[in-house]
Amino acid sequence: MSLKIVRNDITKMNTEAIVNTASPSVAVGQGCDTAIYKAAGYDDLLAYRKENIGEAKMGEAFITPGFRLPSKYIIHAVSPLFTGGDDGEEDKLRSCYRNSLKLAKENGIKSISFPLISTGSFGYPKHEGLRVAADEINAFLLENEMEIYLVVFDENATKLGKKLYPRLESYINNNYVDEMIDAEYSMPTEIPRGSKPKLESRMQSLSSIMPSINSREPSASSRVPLLNSVMPAPRMRQTVEAPREIDFENLTELDERMKHLSDTFSEYLMYLIESKGMKNSDVYNRALIDKRRFSKIKNDPKYHPEKITALCLCIGAKLNLDETKDLLARAGYALSPCDKTDIIFSFFIENEIYDMIELDIQLEERGLNCIIA
Figure 1: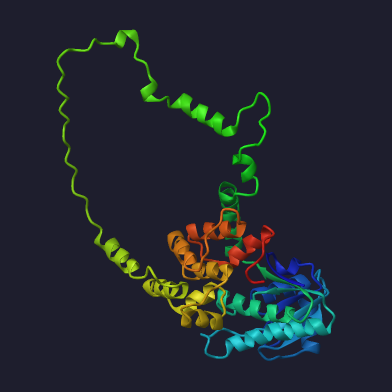
Figure 2 (figure 1 turned 90 degrees about the vertical axis):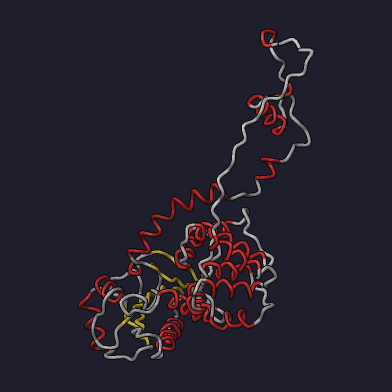
C-alpha cells in the first residue's frame, strides 16, 4: 500500500487505528498522550489500562479500544525517553514501530496513523525520529499491505506551513515550465490569415519602442551644411576610477574551490561538509539518509547517487543554490524548471529552509512523490 506524511491532529484521523506515545507506568504523559486520552475519554481509557494492561516496558506496544475517537483502536507504543542517544534509544524506538505494526497486522487493521513517536515531550530529535519511522514503516510495507500515515502536528510546524504555502505557490507559478512552453514559443506551421507570428509581432513591438538610431533621418531644421575644413574631435574628459577594494577572504575561498574542480560528487560533498564545519551525522540525519548509505557515499569516491538522494544531501549540508547546482552537476544532474519536485527543492534551498519534514509535507500536499516513501 502506501506511506504518507500529513499535517493533521492525530485524534481526528479517520483510520482504523491510531498510535499513541505511551508511558511505561500507568499514567498519562504530556503531548500526544494527553491529547489522545482527552479525545478518547480520559477516565474510560485510563481505567481500561489499569484493569487490562498495567505497566509495560519501553519499546513494547499494547492495544485498546478507541472509545470516542473516530478510530476503532488505539495502539499504545511505550516510547523511550531520549537521554543523549547512548542508552539504546534508537533500538527501543524501532521496536515501538515494529511492535505497533505487528499488533495492527494481527488485528486485521488496514489503515493506521502514527505520530512521530518520542519526538515531542520524550525529547527524541525530530529528524532522527522521522528517519527511524521511515526505515521501519517502509521495511514493513515491503512484505505487507497497509495504509500508513505519519502525522505531523505541532504549533511551529503549522505556522511554518501556513507561512510557506502562498510563497511556495507563487514561486512554483513563476518558475514552473510545463509542456505548454512549446505552444507558447514554437512557430506554427500554418499562420491563420490576418494574424502574425508571435516572434514577428514581438519584434515589431520592440522596434516601436527602441527604433534604430541609424535609421533616423534628421529633420530639415536640424540639417547643417558640411564645412570644408575638418572640425577637430571634441576632447573627451578622462575619468579615473577609484581602485576597487579586494575581498581577500572571497579570493581565498575561490582559490580553495579551484582546488576541487575535478572532485567527484562524493569528494566535493565531503569537502563542502568539512568547509562548513558540520558533523556527518548532522548532515545525514537532516537529509533523512540512512547512516550506512552515507558511509558508502563517503568511502566510495566514485559513488553515483540517485537524483533524489543528491537533493536530500544538499538540504542536509545546508548548501546555497550555487553550491547545490555545482554538487548536482558532478553527478550529472541539474535542477529542472519542468519538474515541480526540483522547483520545491530550489525554493527551500533559496530560502534557507533546511527542513525535510516540511518539504515532504509540501510534496505530499501537491500530489508529488514523498521522500520518506
